[in-house]
Amino acid sequence: MERYSFRSRGIGLEQGSCFVCGQPQPPSLLPNICAVVNVSERERVIKMFDYKARAHASRNDQVIVCACKDHERSLEYLHVLSKISMLTKADVNASKVAPYV
Image 1 (cartoon, rainbow, N blue to C red):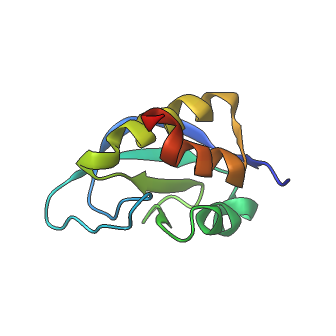
Image 2: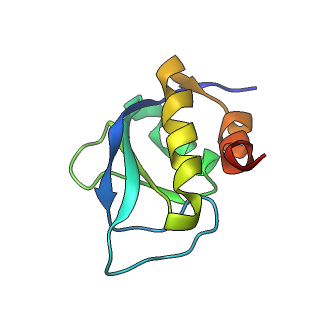
């Protein structure tokens, strides 16, 4: 299983869509993670989130992942997982359900 560098810079607020349910929340701000990734892996990291993550507008080495209020615990779980610095698709999938089990 492929592992990618994904280091969360912390949880903030951003406009976007939820990485769990895809629900867009404009114009309100959603909790988000801005994670540092390898530039060469950025598109693969976005794909790992089923394209529900996006590239940072001005930083090539960062990816933004948002969550709606219903899935904020999933984002917090993903933030904790990112502390290991390497992330897999299985980790992303686990973060969508593990906080609710």
